[in-house]
Image (cartoon, rainbow, N blue to C red; front, side, top):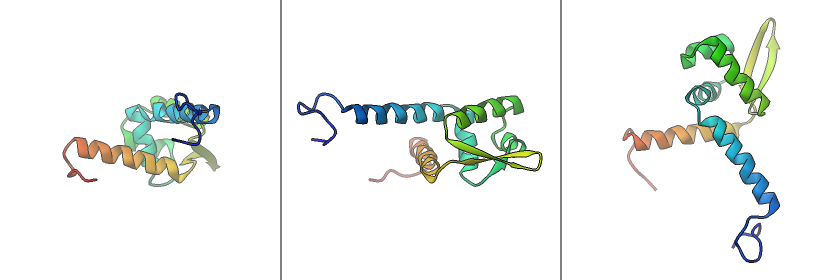
Length: 116
């Protein structure tokens, strides 16, 4: 039994519940092909909107809106480089999460053999 569960084991603690809600929020943001493509590209390094637009193939206004959502959620950071705004992932955990989601997709599509 988990230390965070109540004695009956039926419900997560308040702390665990908040943790699950936060995780669901992150996963919900990843459940969009454009945002996932943006995060995948940012996993390779910092990029501006023009670079990200080319990389994900979406229209620039759409890319900007998705980046705003990711920024407001605290998943990406920004910095100014002259007149450009450069985006980056906030932390490596997100890069690994995106990589793993894409690895699962590769397994489901048969591009990678199954393993334990």
